[in-house]
Amino acid sequence: MRQMITVVGSLNMDLLIDAPQLPLPGETVRGRNFRRSPGGKGANQACAVARMGVDCSMLGAVGSDPFGEELIAGLCADGVDVSAVRRVHRTATGVAMITVDFAGQNQIVLAAGANEVVSLDDISRHSRLLRGSAAVIAQLEVPIPVVTAALQEARQGGAIAVLNPAPCRALDDEVLSRCDWIVPNEIEAGQLVGRTVCSPEDARLAAVELRRRSGGAGIAVTLGGEGVWLETREFSGLIPAFPVRAIDTVAAGDTFIGAFVVRLVEGATPEEAARFGCAAAAIAVTRHGAQASVPHRAEVEAWLRER
Image (cartoon, rainbow, N blue to C red; front, side, top):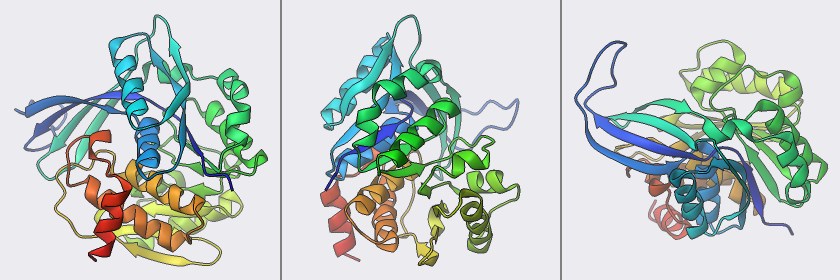
């Protein structure tokens, strides 16, 4: 049985600063604890997959600068295959400027850099990799035609095609129809269906609509401290989160997705996979940073044994 998971998406260097509250427009807030941390939704999810003990490949692009080399080195250290990450000359690596408040909520401004030049040629060049994977995960920090093509390659190869529609952009039903799973957070789910999602019931309604528009994909709407709403053919309901004191929610959703897809590939039910993902995310929010916060599988399994 195929076990390797391929992530198609972004690699960013995160530049973070803590602040007592997120600034309002025109406001200056005195912060502290400036740091940089390897990130990008794609790279974060690849890191999570690898730390859950499944072989992972990353498909994306970085610039010809020190940030790019640092990002690649970090993924290599976790055992991620980076042979499909292209180095783009005379282009900057993607950067995210992140403010984190003392409650752990964050505000992000992104400069996509090399992520914008991931192309259909990259998908064609690595078609065998995508079709040979057990699952392919994509987000929206690379061009939408690239995402659409990657999901199509996954489906044609029999891989589980997973879309994390983040950061949210307008998507037509053709893109959604190429997914086996769609995993938005509550804000992204609301944007996709055109109404606010702020409760499990709102998430259920959004998930039902997304499932209809996609032609039957499984839907997992992450709801932060409340958990995850699952909508599948066999199950509809809330998988509750584990209560923890969050200090930094950066990459919590990415951690959930990586852990969730790993368990799906291993044959777990969606409910089992979501509970495992919730445990991984709960650990992540108790730590600072993006990839720095992602736990290893042994930690997640120990966490679950204690509960």
